Image 1 (cartoon, rainbow, N blue to C red):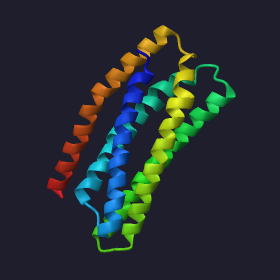
Image 2: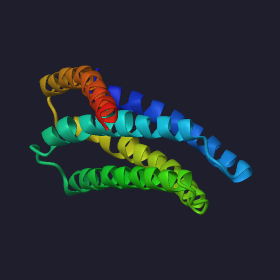
Image 3: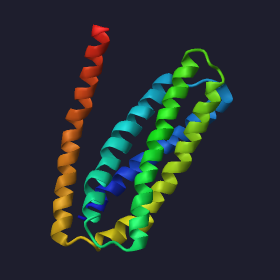
Image 4: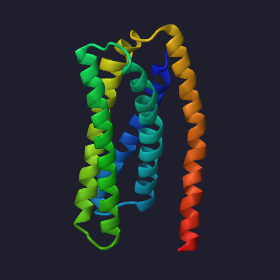
Length: 181
């Protein structure tokens, strides 16, 4: 298996979340409110799975290894765009969290901002995923030997294994901070 296989599987799950977010957008428009648990859960997914786990493997492993290769200008440009897009996704997510907090502190106008950020995410991710799946992943495997690809795949599995511990260390840290405060 090529290391892009797990990344593309992860894309399919991210796409499912985007479909769920689109449903939430329609609910916001019709009900003029949001489901806080839904938004909090979606944000956790985006931050932990889409960003820290998925983008983490791309940036910390795939892009790291590709940056050591003689990439064509086209592939180097796309890789730089992808890193910038990851930053953009983080910013959209953070803006949505801030808007959600404003909404639940009584700012009813923040509902429009939440909707806007959800639309931004559901527009952003499909284009980003298409760029990776159709224009970057497969051609970039040509830069890596079969041995390098196998090594990368093993590093991906190890990265995923560590993520569960990182996630729940942060959960306990947050709960302890709440208890102390």
